[in-house]
Amino acid sequence: MYQLNSLPTPVDADLIKLLVQAEPAVIGHFRYTGFMGPEIKAHFQDVRIAGTAITARAPGMDGAMVHYAIGQARRGDVLVIDRCGDMSIACIGGAVAYAAKVAGVAGIIVDGLVTDLGELRQYGVPFWSKGTCAVTVKTLGLGGEFCLPVSCGGVTVNPGDAILADENGVLVMPAADIRESVARALQMSKDEKLTLARLDAGEKYPDILGSTKIIMDAIEKQKKR
Image (cartoon, rainbow, N blue to C red; front, top):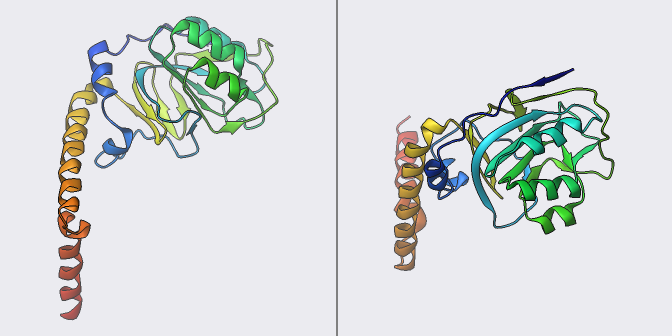
């Protein structure tokens, strides 16, 4: 059985341009939800993307839904694929990667396996997945869903969510959270540069961060028990 929904409203282009300036790992200092599990790994180095999530649920051996999703994708979209727990069959290969390139897809994130890594890297569309496999899906018409909420890396992804991803991980967030999160992340990055300068000037890292004081204070409390 198939279920097809309309594409979500894209996240505002200015918000996407803002979001891609931030690093997921910096946002991870203060935000604790929306991060996919570490089993979702990047297949590209030195990559960072941001875009609007479109989603597909493609169970088992049928790849028709993945093909449909690529055909619907808009320039700048990030396709998130829920494989319903399958860890034996790759749903993405070289031809799909090339179709994604032509469509202008910003990236593809798979809660499952991919194949043809050389071609994926050659075509330049960034991919994240749980791993690789030589066995691939077939076009069978068995069913799937498009643009419904899916699960990927232990996180619920809704069509229209904002995606920020690099080689350290993948973050899913509502578009309404972008401005505040990015502003805080960029300020933290600026502050870190000041910390590095203080290290160059001879200060000790735990002294700068206050860790030494925290430990010493805790030891004093222990002595009084």
